Image (tube, rainbow, N blue to C red; front, side):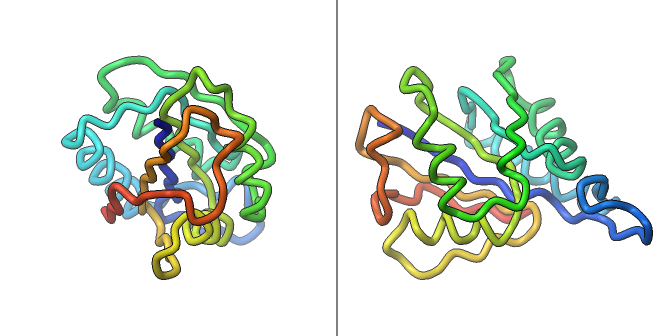
Length: 158
């Protein structure tokens, strides 16, 4: 069985002259991250690996989540997560090593919401800043995951 958690970065700033990749979390965004981290901790959430966009706001979101985990886990920056279409995100998931059973992607919209919607046959999923959704898949191989194969296990808002 495989588990996939999708986390959209928390609320971020817009500062004139700053590149999109350099956008930082706002004070509200940091509070959203702490609240989400606490909810995940209460669920005893422990992914094997975090794959994170290189953007500052996703890196900061991942760092705050990481601080709450009871064990050290692998964090990998994946450049293609930034501004990725959901099909690219699905390829990232499918290319994950099968020895990992719980993967977490920390990224951006619209790609994450589109991927979440593609993975479930339920209504469209709209991920706001700081949201997390987790899916369970009845498979032992990441590359066998297909659309509508995900069984949602939770949807969290900070």
